[in-house]
Length: 197
Image (cartoon, rainbow, N blue to C red):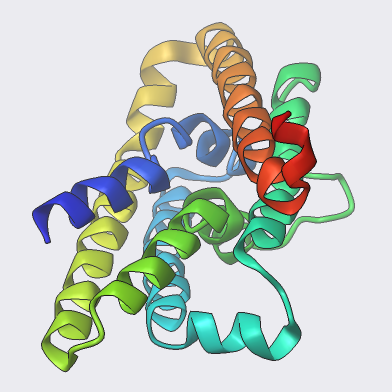
């Protein structure tokens, strides 16, 4: 269970995606940023809990495999990573001034295809009711950790200043894009086994 908790937190990667949160909430007051952070934690909890309990059934109903989910999800995240590297200021489109807590922060940035696939696999390998309860506890730990890291993120932005945040955003945008490309390359051979050769 400890291994599963560490793995889920690592895949959710709230520390590495902190620049995304700061960019998406740029221009908002600190109180608004904190509210988005807490709502993101709630969103992560909801998405991963549903994935744990019903994820496999939902994917089967729509005829979608985990590799397709990974490719679609990471393609979307890669578009955000690209915007982090190429745009100055907020990476949200000008016409979208809504709350980014659920989309794209909770899903697919934090509770992305990798995290969803992990909890679905956990549910398949641990079908007992007590295992499901432990799974919910593990999901809750990652959700709370995400909310706390994002909650204190504005202090980091204040410390770095505009120039520092610009560099921080572009560097982590490149890292996030590389992670997306790696995950897509990992999923492609499952869809097209011939690529392995």
